[in-house]
Length: 222
Picture 1 (cartoon, one colour):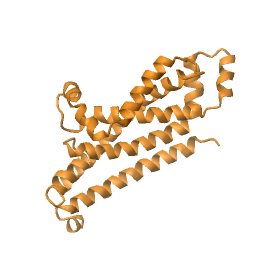
Picture 2 (cartoon, helix red, strand yellow):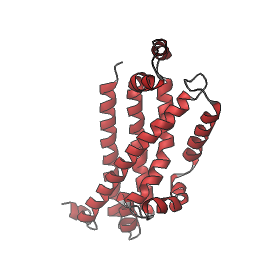
Picture 3 (cartoon, helix red, strand yellow):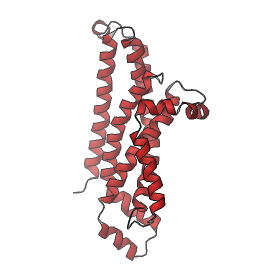
Picture 4 (tube, helix red, strand yellow):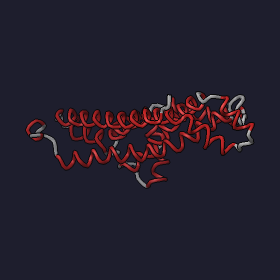
């Protein structure tokens, strides 16, 4: 039935492209969550009146975040070609896309983490300080648990942006549905391929959005 509606589709190639999109998105999302959380914590903790108040570190981290958020993703991939080749040994394929995906998304998530942490009731933090809690305890037992719904909501938004980034990365040979849509659809004027890849990407976005919203609603105690 599918081959009748989309005569130019190769099911084997489509499955591989879909798998590569999930592969890039999930691995990049893990890296983004870790690095973004660190960046967000540094922005929050070193800010004015923060536990580690330090304007110089805050300026450096903020500059890093702002610069990499400002660079268009397609240009960032090109800029990172030498670094990617050094790190992965190639500039093509799903693994080669991961450094750019993580570096492009982590600063974005870092800002969302900072915003989430700022929403935590300062009274709870002050109470933990007055009880002699260490900074590590405040981070792991107060800040992160209290901001968890917002953190999950932020990583959901980031995941959806990442799916779009994987499609852009595919245009320059990273694999995935973007690669399949461009090289086997657009360049060959087989627009049924482009259309089906678009449908699958939209479905993937809905899947991540549903999972993220479900987890957020379960965690939100309000």
